[in-house]
Image (cartoon, rainbow, N blue to C red):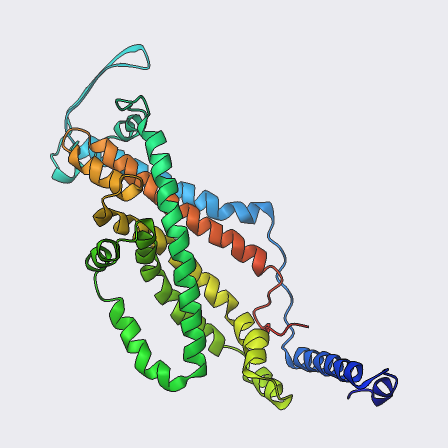
Length: 338
């Protein structure tokens, strides 16, 4: 209980009220901590444990590359090489099978894709340099779209939590919005609004807001009911419940949604670039590579690789942010600021 002797010692009524409020908040935090189940905090992983996901990823990647070239050797086109790395070595391999999916047009050799990165254009720039700048332009649209979508999704979740009747009527519309093909929505947003690269960001935000809305709503509902009732017993406002309980409880759910939204924002930005006519982003690079696919298939595959790396990079950024933000989070944490 609050110490009334401390209140009597306060110089005036304003300071006494502030002191009483601080005492009540301290009591509330102590009571919530008392009802929280005690579980040991996770021990930080060793460097070996942290390397396991990386090693697993590299192993899967190596397996994919082996299967790729294995399919070429078994069912691809004839392989004729005269000289390898300056050595007088000749290879003339005729695969025993003929698979359409493994021919040089559908599935070029890995070294064909690798060499495509170093093909120079009329200006003298290599494809790798052009794709690097294109990836930066796409990342800009994806980043803005991610921020817009995440912000709108979180605001929608807060509204749905506060107004249950609105949730029952609005959620079906949100679900229906995600059934419309993005390739049909993108021209309406990009061409119709004529907003330039910001229209591309809006397309990215369109793919981003839905997972954040659903995850945030579920996360804020996962808060411990005992903590909720205790906050109400102290006459806590809806704002206090939101900031002290619901949002901290939703943090793990939000970061899971952010991982999905990060990669979706890259896809949305690329799709938004297709009808925009821009040549800056990866969408324009994909359209350009498609025009030369019959004679330079490695060019399109190189563009696809860069787009994939951009998506993986955005995912990794969210993972790093999650580790930093939730490093002191407990699975049974009630999310109350002390």
